[in-house]
Image (cartoon, rainbow, N blue to C red; front, side, top):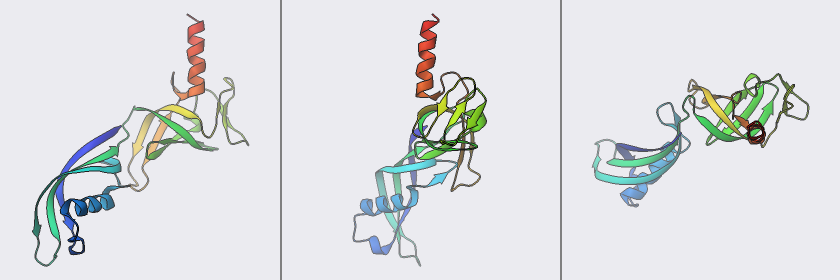
Length: 184
């Protein structure tokens, strides 16, 4: 899920940045700190959207930097269990597929790719034995989050499934919708 998060904290501005306005300098420091930052509390920070309020700066003896009480907003992406997302398949391997979902990639284990026996073939695709469905790099898909782990904060793991009704490649979903219309 994408969020805009409002945060209030002190932002350190080094003496070398005193020639800039406080707001410009604070925005630079926040971008350095948060853009491409990942945490279990915020998820993946996409951007600093605004600096809303800058309070009075204080200088701490021995440091020389100014600390400003600041209110700012961040755009974040925090994957949530059972959330359904749309993404693009960026890689197919013998053990599954990787799907780009916003700023992160999720992994679809071969057993979660479709409700069928799945084979990995030499052309770099996954194919269903009975359904004859094919999953390939570049496919736009709908998947559900079934696992989220921040154990390695630099590389969060997101597990996805496409085994449920109306999940999978958009081509499969279109076929299901046509089949449902014919059966009515």
